[in-house]
Image (cartoon, rainbow, N blue to C red; front, side):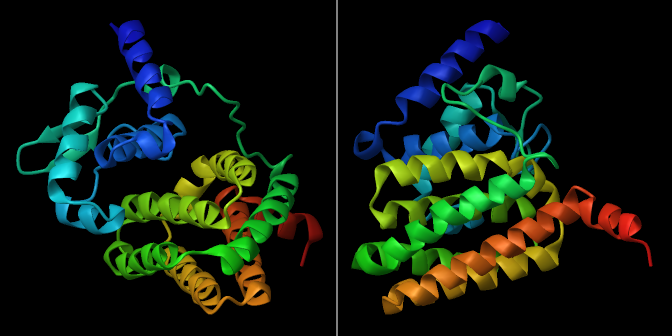
Length: 255
């Protein structure tokens, strides 16, 4: 059964990468599957309410319900009476083994990973400040407005954060940079999961996101690059805290 489910999920996950051909519901399914596959959503996690998901994902209720039905049929989520939708105990990370490489963030590669993210994402956001269409900016503005609903909801924030960074990459207009950014973003998701349990960090990231979008809206290339650079600094700092590296560094240095 697990093998069959794994093949089904792999087929769906890969087929959904059809870009412009994929429907709204299928796009949502793909996002959720990616988050389960990478460990950003785990067994027992409760999804935000339908109303919040509609706002976070920027989709209609029928599209959301179609996506949730598909995920339930695949055994990825289950609906509990009066309690919302939860990720099941399905070993989804194994079943959805990625078709492209996936590396985990570790103390050994953390500095290199964030150096790489800065090289790629600063360029992406600078390009977005030059190239973003009115629709791109409207989509980003909608996501900034949706942050208000997730300040106390780490799972909802992680879903919105993934969508936000994907949109920045799309607005940059370079498909190769977009793919590289996606892989680098996924490297840190397990650590990001731990870091986002801190509500103050969620608010910090939301403020960073707002500054990035303001710079893109103004077409200010330098300000946009500086804003994403500061955001990545904050993500690296929170990642180090989540990994216990800051405390270890202080103990090594001594008082």
